[in-house]
Every structure is written in C-alpha cells, then in structure tokens.
Length: 74
Image 1 (cartoon, rainbow, N blue to C red):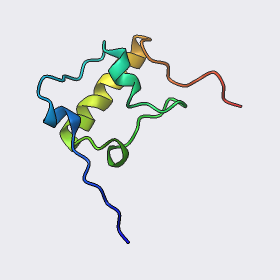
Image 2: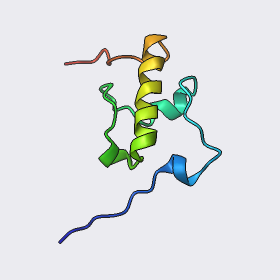
Image 3: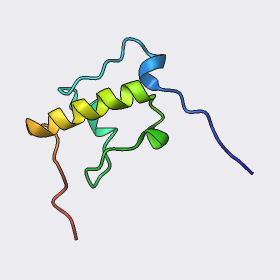
Image 4: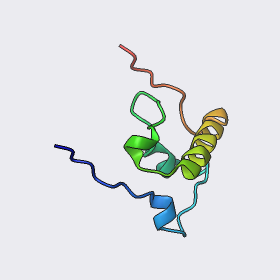
C-alpha cells in the first residue's frame, strides 16, 4: 500500500510568492522547532527552490533573524 501523495512546490505554483530571508514568518515554516531545515521530501519544494530556501535560511540565521537552535535542548 503506497500512499504517496504528490506534493507540489508552493513556489512553482504561486509565482507571486518569493523566497526572501527577511520574511521570517515564511522562513519559520521550513524550520523545525529544534532549528533544523525541513528536507525537500517532507516540505514538497522542488530542488531549485529548496536550494534557494536553504541559502536564505542560512542567511537569516547569520543576521540573527532566525535562531540556529532552540534554548530548550533538554
């Protein structure tokens, strides 16, 4: 029983939606509560947009818009 659902890249679907490191609300949707970047197979983004998303997430971390990890690591 293969329950594969086809996930469509939201950035390919909606051309008006852009990836920007300053858009913290959008960036947080692609990061787990532990601070890890959600992989492509889970998020459903295409390879091109996943690379761009990763680049922007790392940039947002560098200028302290997003944390590298959470404080509650217990």
